[in-house]
Length: 174
Image 1 (cartoon, helix red, strand yellow):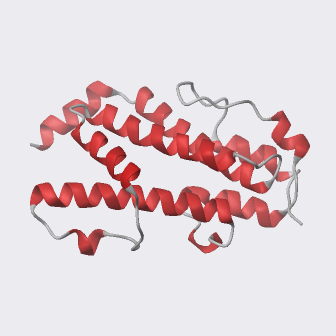
Image 2 (cartoon, helix red, strand yellow):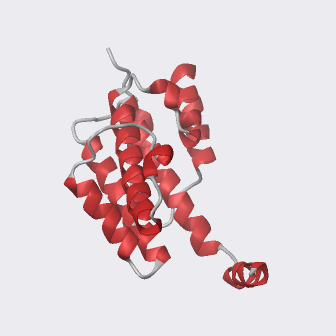
């Protein structure tokens, strides 16, 4: 029987794609430490690095498959523009479906790299929302929350970056 973390999950603030994260991923883990078993804590800690060894968890497998398929579609699109064989860059062989192709193509065609990345992360966010359906107070919902938090942290780093310094570095490299 799956574990339920009613107190922990009900105490977590809601996350919105367009808002700043309420706390860091590390603070999230600190909140979880005393309220979940060590095995689940280890799983959550491994999420930023890929959690490849936890594919037996259906929500995690679905998320990793979706993210891999999205990345594979981006590889195919970029490889076709450069006239390079994409096969050596693809991760796993599975059917991506037309919606993933259109998400990747729209992001690739966006004239703004930043807006293209935002559309990819918004698609990831929306997929996590779909995965959350039917999961209430269980480990799967904690996994989904953690991935959403990681997406928000990424955008917080992007927004807070020293843009002048980054531009200067990019120009000096050419």
